[in-house]
Amino acid sequence: MTPRIVVLSAPSGGGKTTIARAVREKHPDGFGFSVSATTRKPRENEHDGVDYHFLGRSQFLEAVGAAEFLEYAEYGGELYGTLKREVDKVLSAGRHVLLDIEVEGARQVREQYPPPRSMSIFILPSEPRVLLERLRQRKSESIEQIRWRLDRAEYELQQATLFDRWIRNDDLTTAVAQVVAIANENSARGRTRDKKDFEWITNYGRMLRTLYDELH
Ligand code: ADP
Ligand code: 5GP
Image (tube, rainbow, N blue to C red; front, side, top):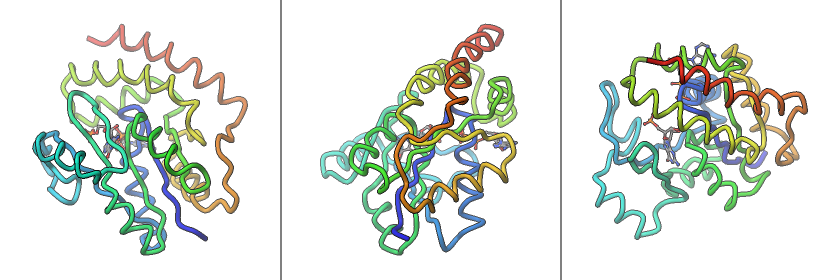
């Protein structure tokens, strides 16, 4: 099986970080992870070179100038990017490479590596209320940041149609198995989605908006 780029995107709280970690833990020989670069400050328990390569803004822009990024984008006022060398390292070791990135970066990767060279997966819990609960329970963002991230989620949901697959992150084990199956599909075709999921995704943004208005 030729290793491919597996892009995981989700509105904040959707579960991409958790799923990416679980996939690697379950299949360390089949999957590797690309450590992104960012200008955002490390959170408690985050380590440079492990969770991210933490760069100053000028360092990041230098790397952009030196064409070191496969993609990069701005999110919440900070820059985030996938380093080509990180992706190449994993692919050349014969493993699929997982990217946990936002939607704009996902679009850029898909353009450069169309399916089956990459597969892009959009992840959400079935219920918008669960998305909000998970985001709040994670306790890594202030209420203002949660508001911003929910606001951003509306835009991200509008981009969901660009993705090759949609996954419901309700039961973690099931979601992990789905990601592994998609990565290992033999003749992966782009944009194959369950028809009944269109209605789900279409209504999701509206339901999130209601929850957002209730948030104080
Ligand atoms: P993202 O990286 O997309 O922002 P996270 O992976 O940080 O999302 O998940 C958000 C929160 O939801 C975390 O606290 C995580 O532990 C929890 N979570 C993720 N997936 C599940 C799941 N299937 N069931 C229960 N909790 C989950
Ligand atoms: P966080 O600050 O919560 O770690 O990440 C914020 C957002 O940036 C998330 O949606 C995450 O997926 C995204 N992100 C992380 N790394 C990259 C990257 O290399 N490129 C892009 N485009 N987005 C990234």
